[in-house]
Image 1 (tube, helix red, strand yellow):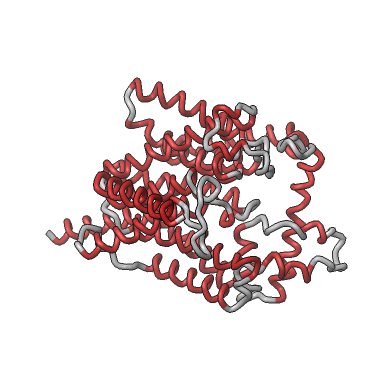
Image 2 (cartoon, rainbow, N blue to C red):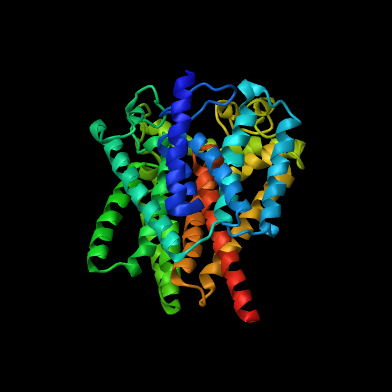
Length: 453
């Protein structure tokens, strides 16, 4: 076992050094992000104390070590924390206190594991990305890398939905033991919403690459749009479709001349209303998973008001600090026998909260959820400023637009799913937020230096 651990660590170190030498810290962040998607715990892991050793975690530790070294050598941007970073630190400290002041040993230290994997690791990636030197070439490489990865996910999702297992990699995706959502495009995440998340971001990246592409490049991009459209459809998840459509509409509306925006938005909304009005019943009760009937699919819609009522009752009892981060599965049990409502609250027993904000509200109260909302607002503000800055280069500006489009997908799905519990969902959010904040800060610094000279 020790030999295997040493080989895995050595391989991760070698590849990490190559990536850092060729592409810098930003390439290292991308490597950790994509390795976590495809080469995470289901693909390969070794027992190594309380936290299993996986390839992406080895790369993550190596990236942090490289970042410390680069920072000491003044090879990073050397950015000081701004108000956004202080809000982020405050939010994480609330999560940390909420975890440690409650039963953090529950279910084999599950609250601590959630804190580390769903928030601490993304926070570190955010800071490294934010403090990286961001050139036009590196920002274009991020767009291209996200697009190509999304194409892989789309091919995998289509193969899954059509049971073409020979085209699926990694092979654990085809394992019937991973039965949840089986029959939908789940990708290496084993979750259709997370798979749709990365595909949608790849779609937005492809849309942003369109103006820079030549004739042959645009021909290839048309093929990419087709593949990604099929892949997003193959998730068979309504919120994924809505989020991808909303993000794409944000890209189009902010790209076209202002005089076209109102008619175009009105036409899209009218078309959406017609489709919803004529296909509503079919959309609410179509068969998705191989193990579920259409009636059981429709039940998932009726579950949302039940979960919302449970969350409201929990919030009323602990409005400021909640029941403790990671404590919802056990804390909710005290609220399932409420007879003041006609809703069958007992149906919520096996489920987590299906809403990012309600999940934080129940576990961390107004303090934790409020800080998270402020954090998202600051990220959106930075992305908007970056996109609206006509003096910045096109490659810099489109990073702001990419983040705005991604937030369209994120918010559309955050209302129906707790994205923070999905593999690599927060990692993508925090990574692109770090790139956006870093680009905005770097441009502001260059503008200030130019004004002084």
